[in-house]
Length: 233
Image (cartoon, one colour):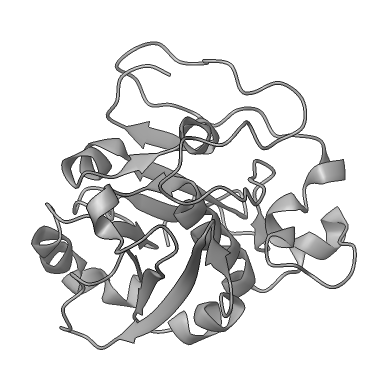
């Protein structure tokens, strides 16, 4: 995973909640407390995430996995990396939209595929979860297996030597691709998890999502560390 500075793993202060709307529904209301993020960047430039919110509501992201007990900021910093990544992946599926033809009916399962070393732990965190009205159907892919039947695909960093070829095959298909390595966006991936000052954050390739006919809620783009394509906020 690309890293600006190595430090203890924690979730980023910028976060999501858990909307109840179906995946293909219109964008949900702004999930965080207080006003929605305001535009902060000129046209044609990278988009930076909004300033970090107070630590008092830092745990919201981790709570998307229904933790049994209240979690403070110090506890959140100690959460296992797979749990934090699973929370991000879950929210990406909840804030993305697919063409209507991608689902047989409004409550059909959303097929989330996992590829690469370390994904079993992430899959366990996502067991019995749902993206709006769509229950998650988890599939573990073998190397070289076709991913066209997936609605979303997480590719671990261990697959970096092979990810460019895989992403090229999915370029025009409605598959939300989520990665975990340097160069993922350059290879055609849509969302890349990254380490910034010890926090897991993410960057978005909006050009890739549009090419595949997918959409991302503008609130997701507002929380991204940077967004490639799409003009100004």
